[in-house]
Image (tube, rainbow over all chains, first blue to last red):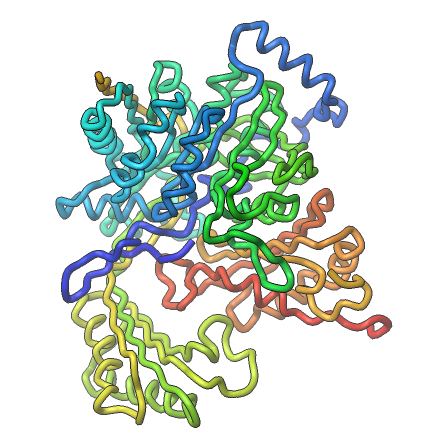
Length: 513
Length: 112
């Protein structure tokens, strides 16, 4: 959960390594108002809360249908585009694992990839080769099926690159790619307003990308076709995990009424999708919440049974921990109304979910229920929002804060003198007020001035950032460590599209050993 | 980790995580125990949380309760300077807003 994912346009013209990291979009949820099912549609508690005994019976029926195994183990190999690679290697080496899912699309990752594609770069995850070179051989050896949204803006090219890696390694593989999320050519089919209430039409001329969040169905189709690797573009995170469950267990989908199985499956997907965030990552607070082994954090595994039983765990010997507390934090991460978490595959009621420790680093999940899928899909619309210029410089010791404040005033004066007029300007003192405003007290030993400007053109953005750098020789005493950075900004707004205007497509590549 | 009646800050009773969606932050408060949850459910009203985040632009706060996990979920609108994609803030996601809530002070026993 780190970088903000805009492409850096430095003097050297290089991209930062983490240029694809973005905040996790999390879901693909539509708005609360658009859910198709109401609370009234839900069945009674009696129907929803089957006992363990009932579940076993249900599972046995499923097995009797010959639909699949009693338990499927699904690992999460990445929680964002730039995530660590070793945890996925460890998972791929687990002989008991059946699926390995990589969630690599933040909210605007696809839009950034589309820009990269336009500039002759890859339209898929820039670390795809690195990841697959690290895990594919293990996956073939252990019969682990891979599902990932690393295809970003170009799933077909990602599949071709994957096939090439497999061929070079002498692996026999079937690689499927799911396309059809791109709805930029159907701009008029988008609903009229953004989630924020702006007219969508206002973004028409600046649109970089418009992608709908697909659901589990095309992935299920790929798995039914025997794919060993399924690569998608924009798909809701939880769908990556639900699809293998539907495929393995033959669950009814889309479901007509409230479904405990789909609800549990989507809850599991939501819990797993951020990888380390449920195994003790993003959780530690020394003295308050101590977590061992964060440098070797294990990524999570969901153990799913045919009747919708879910246990979250991780490999023995890996760092971190899985506890009801780590699970609860993730349960509500990027969720608004827990009674109606909207994803393409259902409207999930998380409000009755409970967690119980059932073993070392093993937590059983109960109570997720999902109403049927909404008839609309969320669309992330990426638009050209100009450039961001940032300049920083540090001051230390006695009077550090005063000198940093003087530096900020100088920069503002300089912008006036030079006639630089950014659309937005912000000055912060890192160490004083940059995160939450000036809520602390006392002067810190060191202070870093940060000046950030949003500008319509690159020259203005660069001009603002340069005014910070020139403080070296023209500003207050003792300024050090100046840095500047100019980035293109891709803004994202969300809207909806009717599901029947989106047509997922599947392609398959066979690689012979 | 302390007696829930004596705790002076939210952090003593709960762990907190923030997530973002557009210009809205959701801050999840996971209490250590049912007793801690009960106290926080009384103290952390929507209005008090809104006041805590008002200087950052918070417009409305909606509190969702998930007592089966001792969790409160605060959905805080307008608090992300437009949202991660175009915000000029250092922490454009508002990830660190969890700590602003964790640092909220609670009235001592009998003060309320």
